[in-house]
Length: 111
Image (cartoon, rainbow, N blue to C red; front, top):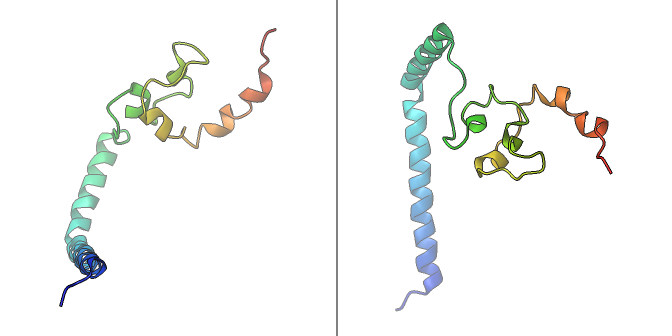
């Protein structure tokens, strides 16, 4: 009796699903001990006054999101494209959007 390729693929998916569920169960098992470590790290960050996490290493305005202004990606030219791919992934900070949002309606282009 030969097995169809779809049966092999179904068995492969079942094994992957079992592995994924075991990863979730392991994460749930390790969550309580990790909460104490996370609370200690949060207290250290608060005590030292550290800024946000550096997620990208490409440009200064994507390394420290809370310290960047909205015009940093366009420092070479106002209509220049962003040099780094992470600049298109990261949106501007929500706290700064209300202040900068009406600028596109206030400016005029010269003839």
